[in-house]
Image (cartoon, rainbow over all chains, first blue to last red; front, side, top):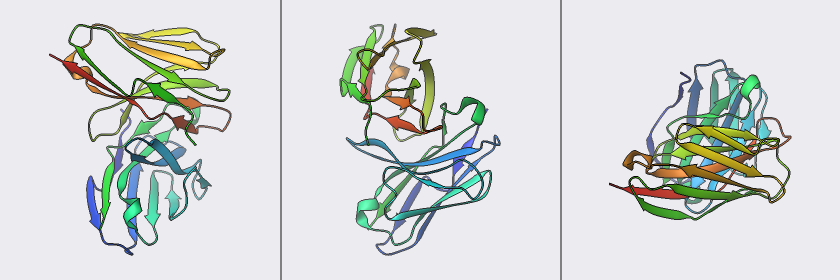
Amino acid sequence: DVKVTQSSRYLVKRTGEKVFLECVQDMDHENMFWYRQDPGLGLRLIYFSYDVKMKEKGDIPEGYSVSREKKERFSLILESASTNQTSMYLCASSSPGQIYEQYFGPGTRLTVT
Amino acid sequence: SQQGEEDPQALSIQEGENATMNCSYKTSINNLQWYRQNSGRGLVHLILIRSNEREKHSGRLRVTLDTSKKSSSLLITASRAADTASYFCATGGNQGGKLIFGQGTELSVKP
């Protein structure tokens, strides 16, 4: 079974802190995605990556950056956390052969105070 | 940008009843998928239907797709309390593996 893990289930950070959210998948998937999920807004795509060192902006990239140094790891970075970035963050991956079927991690609920 | 819109936003039924959720979308698609999310957890892929298909079954799940109306429905038959979750439709187009998710339907199945 595909396993996508995220570094933390719950995280509390202060405004202005730099925050790293890590995602690791164990199925050699080329494609990886970061979403945030907010009540009433569904899932919104922040960034995605089709290969190592490649990244593309999603629908809401402002205030975020990403890093993909290794195929299995995709990191989301909040350069200076703000209260409006309090949210559930979900990582997903998919393979080129089944590019539309995404496998999700359990999510990280981030609170910025 | 939000593509899919689910209807209803919330649905409460008794165990054994059928649950139907609808999804509408705006642009042309390559495929449409349904995902389930248990409370506070990640999403799990349920079923994918391609744009040239009209109906697909998987166990107690039945999905239909009407590309002329830009809509899809998910039917869960003989529901169980364990089906309680949020259900999301997601559309895939011509942008690689990128998906656009709807806002979800929250299903509650009472024993």
